[in-house]
Image 1: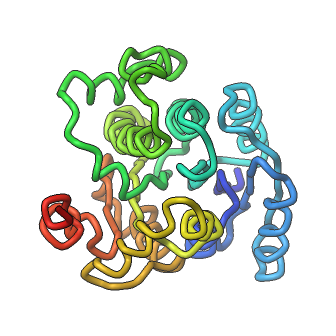
Image 2 (image 1 turned 180 degrees about the horizontal axis):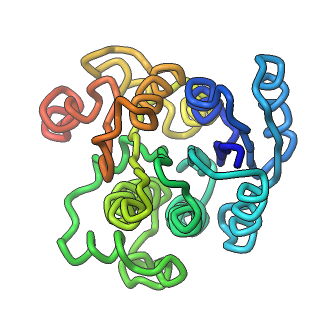
Image 3 (image 1 turned 180 degrees about the vertical axis):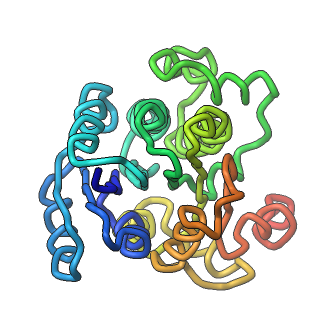
Length: 278
């Protein structure tokens, strides 16, 4: 069967990784907005890739299951890049949890049922998950292993507990990494691997929304006071994605790679630390 790489979220990061790992494979680009997927598909097709597109709403299980069905009809799913989601400036807490937390859990569950032997996946999480205060061992386990359709009923995720969009985003991204760690065990039984990348501020349309939004000043401060002193690029994330999904990353699974220019380091031990700001 033809090898198929599925990109969920046809934005800059997902497409950049796809360009690195999809030569000789069929690329299925899925996005909430079909026109976004089609625009990205044209760029890839002009570069010699075999591409098809579809719409997907990752907040809905039925839509994700339809995506899985389309992917498996095209061939053997050897790669998955999950880069879809919403940011704190784009949605209220409930929507962020529905899309970024629940949607990712369903994607890992459903594609974990069909991923080919030797296949691999990368889930794009965020540096934000690393700045969330430590959860209890019980909370970690609940986020990692609760069946996807029961996740949003957890007491720790109710509206009276998660009231701020940034907190919802941090919890979701922490959950993504925890979920991948747990799913890596199940994926391993199929001879497949799955990892997360937690990027910092990467210059994409979503990052531009943040930089021009209500938290823009804080984001610019993070860039200025990070050890690297700049934002990242989609190609830099793609280099890590290609490592994780390729033969050279064959010993890496269930891991989270933080790549944020040192923002998290500065948050805990440098000028971005709350004590330093005080």
